[in-house]
Image 1 (cartoon, rainbow over the protein chains, first blue to last red):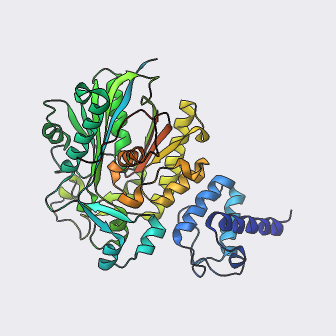
Image 2: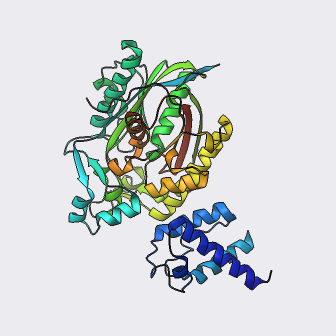
Length: 85
Length: 342
């Protein structure tokens, strides 16, 4: 896969995880809104980090996922970590 | 079979005054909905002016001894050791346990405190169980008691929503490793690199030796919520898994996981990490909040009294707290009748 398609597939995996685990609308997540705008509280980002650690072996440091991020910005941080893993 | 410490009594005690989310919302910038969605807590109890940790510890201890008597007769309450887990002792010095033993009429039995904050009960249980298996004691009263309402910052909406006061206790007796109630193993750990995440900065030798009064707010309990959340989930999950590997059980074999009642979202995240179903998790923090060292024995009392925890259940207890500290214990639930009222 090209780098672009890896990131595309990661984006859908992450949006799928958030939607499945926290009952949020996937279309809204993909709309480009920030987590803040989607009323995703900061604990959900902590919970998401723990799920990514378990499911994908990606270890995010506290605060790396910010509520001011859009899904694309979060995926860029997760993708950079996945490359290191 | 080998000599083991066996759970044979269980009791709990809460102070009389309940504080609802609505009452907190009337004083602080918070709401019932905010507290419930972020913590799962609806109610907590607080001590009255002049009431202390030892008062709750004595009440819970009396009830655990009464519980032991109901199944084992008068001699079942003849304990020769008291271990009290607390990080809100009556006074900085001496320990609170000797006074509790004295008030319970236990004579001159050895009695001491264990300070491991929210992991305190598991540490105290491991300590007392080890003293029994080593032959130092025959019967032990293990109490977890805290009054965090006495150290909270009155204007901190987060900690005031989370913490409540309470005490819970178990009686252990010497028995055999194959019996129901026998403690089958422990996993304990700490990471002092995280000591600042859960702390009361002032009041100890570090601050008192300066000769200066504490900086404003330093006399109160402080907690870094998000990193604590992460550490609690990782350490309770990993500690439980290490213990399960040692005992020879899988998460799917467990009937109940009684985790420290810190936050319902932490409990569910631990369940997610271990692959547990919701019905395996004991939850009572909605009615009592986070009662620190009392949380696990109070959750056990509630679950056993409500029929959610029954003899023969395979159970893991797991805690996480300041220090940082964590610890887990495994047992097959015995036929005990919890006592939660005088």
